Amino acid sequence: MSIDICAAFDSGNIRVVDIDGDRVDLEIVQDHKSEFYQWFHFRAAGAKGRTLTFRILNAGGAAYAFGWPGYKTRVSLDREVWRQTETDYADGALSFTHRFDSDVAWFAYFAPYSMERHHDLVARIALMPGVTHRTLGHTLDGQPIDCLTMGDGAKQVWIYARQHPGETMAEWFMEGALEKLTEPGDTGARALREKATLHLVPNMNPDGSRRGHLRTNAAGVNLNREWSSPTRERSPEVLAVRDAMDASGVDFAMDVHGDEAIPANFLAGFEGIPSWTDAHGEKFYEYARRLASATPEFQLDLGYEKAAPGKANLSMSTNQVAERFGAVAMTLEMPFKDHDANADAQFGWSPARCKALAHACLDTLAGQLDEI
Image (cartoon, rainbow, N blue to C red):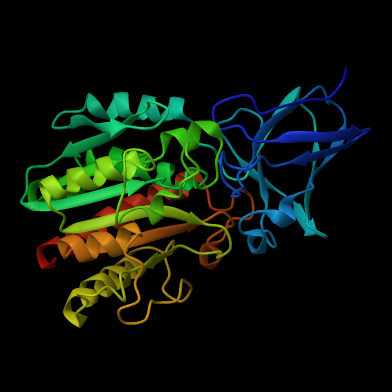
C-alpha cells in the first residue's frame, strides 16, 4: 500500500514535495495572499507497520522560525488525544518520526480546533439558560462571526480569541471559558454573571481557521493590525467586533492568542498608549499578579517587552481597546511548546490545560471586577 498524505479538510495545511521510501518531504503552504506560514495539519495513511520520517523542508522560512528549537509536533490517532512527539530542527528543516501501529495518524502544529467543533460549541452554549447568541457580522468568505453573551451586570467584559487562526489554543481556552460561565453551580461564574455582562467571541477569524492559515484572514490581512481603522473590504471581522464594543462599552477585555517561541503563559498589557496612567496600568498588573498566585499555569517572568511611553501600536487590539474605552485590556499568550514552569512531557501545553487556565482567568476576574 502506498503512503497517502492529505490536508484537504477543515484547517488542513501541507504540500507533498517527495516520498522516498520511509522519508516524506513536505512544505507548509503560505497563507492566501500573504507570506505568513507556520501552521500545519495533515493526515498520513498507508504506512501501518512502518516508521516514517517527516521533514518539513521550508520550516526555516516560516514566520517565526526562531520558535522551532525546543518545539514538539503533536500527533493523534483519534483526533481527540494529541501527544507530543520528538522533533528536531536543523538546517532549516523540521523533522519528526512516527511508528505506525495504526492505519492512519494525524499531525499538527498544535491540537486543531476545527470550524465544525466551533459550530458544535456555539450550538451547545447558545442553548444554555441565560445565554444570548448574536451574529456580529460575516467574513469575506461569508462565515458568521459568533458572539455569546451572558450576565446582566453593569460591567462590560469582552473576551475574544483566534484573531490569528493557527493559534488554536485560543479557542480551546474559549471553550473552557464558555463551559465555566454556563455552569449553574460555579460560584465564580455566578459572581461574574451578577456583576457583569460578558461578551465572548470564540473565533474572530473563521476564514483563516478553515483555510489552514497561521495568521491572516481570507484577504491575507493580519487582523491584529486593523483595530485603528478596520474596513469591510479588508477586515470585516474586526469592524464587526469593534462596532459591537462601541455599542456596549468595554470595562475589561482579554484578547487570547498563542506564542510560537516563549515556553510560558503570559500577559501583555497596554503600556505606551497616549492616555496611559499608572493607576490604569496598575489594575492590569494587579490582575496578572493575582492570576500568578492562583495557578501554576501562569507566570510573570517571561513575556514581551513593554512599549515606551507614547509608542503603543494602536492598530493592535489591546492598545486600541484600552485607549478607546479606558478598559483594563490585555493579551493572553499561550505556548505552542509547553508552560515550562509546570511542564508535561507527554502532552505539553494541551487543550485541557488551556481550558483550566480559562477557569483560573475567570475566577481571578471575579475577585477583582469590583476594582476595575
